[in-house]
Image (cartoon, rainbow, N blue to C red; front, side):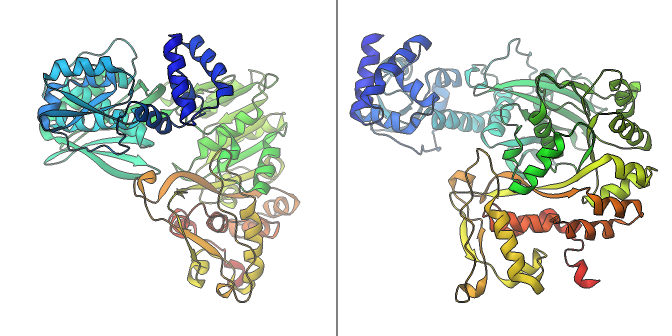
Length: 601
């Protein structure tokens, strides 16, 4: 082991991958963990896997292929089982002059090539590539093969939780279902839709909030696919007439992913939707959500208050739960007793008591909140305020010294006040307990690799609802806010454009638009972030509430106190260079209210 590590270390030093001064430390770490030096470099982020593989391949006189040809002959796949390919991180690519060209992830491993040579019965020629590229290609090519081979055999459930990359089961239906999860994790999908049609089975993924079709399977394979998913989710495979709900835990590339499974019967067969909850990817820091610095500071101060009510509003899928989790994470300390009532519990938070409501047995949000008050809590999170009873209990909890966080389904922040009034909550109760209301939407983030700058037009500014009568002042304020956009560990936005001069593009700001590249799967977008409308219930807003004002009047008062409405905050994100005009318009078109209302009035 020592000699092998020294040999690899010398190669990496010669190719400039690692300094000789750090070599002893890396060798020691590798010995302690039972790993190769190359693995330690990649896992700690000290070097890119591609650079390491290139160096090792160059030393062995082996060519390197970053992009692997996916058009692999069916006969080669028949000769090399998927379990063998995964175990050795290699894959035959093509035949040339009686030899088989093979992609390998470890140029220094001759034994795997010897095994493959014996299996194929003919010479092999290795080319190097990254393990990620090879693993991805293994799943893609065998998936195509499986789609044609799917049968109606029922398969037994695996007893142990094993990584999908280590799975060696050769049953086509099992490999096909495993590939559903693998592809979803690779493409950052939040949901998998398995939908029967007249001709086949269509698989769609929800990526960054958009559904895209990625796979198909023969119509005859539907029963096998659904049965396999039901077995993994612990559902009744014989029941095909009623909806069912279950849960699966999967391990994909070393990450544990919880999968919520829902099946419903349709005229064309059972339809399955699976929600993937990747615990490693949830953003539990408010700094990762896309706030401007001012709003982040205000909200952070509000969640540290000892009592009161904080509301997050928006439609389903607008990121409300993520914001609430980030808020709880900020105040989750050993001296705080935090309890949550959720429907369902999406992520388990360490140190927090989480309860899942169950209306069928009488465990509603109101019932949970009533029980929480006997548990000596400091902070309570209620998944949603749906009725007068829950609203009344939340108010009583805040008045007796508790901080209550919850959500409402309203289009904007001022609408939360009128919604509570509709629930028969008195204005004086609202004004004395509600500290702030945060409305939000999610917009797709421009790919930082391929986004393209352009000079904004007056039509762009009008569509974003900016006040054209005070355009210079409005743009100046938004530039200042854009320059303070907080993106946490994400890549920073491009610098906000400087204040325009009279000769610079007519004084118009620089916006960015999507293009599409390999890094973003040619969509132009990668990931999502929030746009926010934070209404602080200060003295002016409080007086408007006590006067029984409608949402439009409350909005006008709040804007006078510095609140940006959703579309204006979207303009801030556009100027910051992290999203596009089209994304903001799509996210806010249904709530285009009164950004020009003052001029109209």
